[in-house]
Length: 96
Image (cartoon, rainbow, N blue to C red; front, side, top):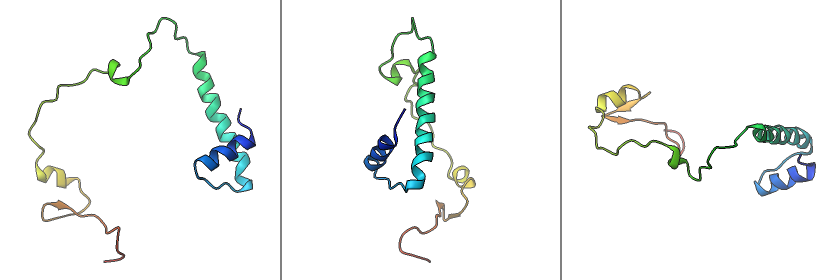
């Protein structure tokens, strides 16, 4: 299980700043994560062929062009619209 030094190193690699009082709770979270992964070792995988890419096991549908959805149907789900377009709050440049 990870030591406090491991947690500090991982936090530094992730560019996270941990306060000293956050170290123990973070170490406990890492321990729970590692325990969850360790439980995967208990699964019997004998006789199961390895899959090297997810698409090898997936059934993909044919890429067939279809008619687009009607604009009115799309805008019916929008919280706000204006002149046939989605209206969103301003995120750059301050208040309106």
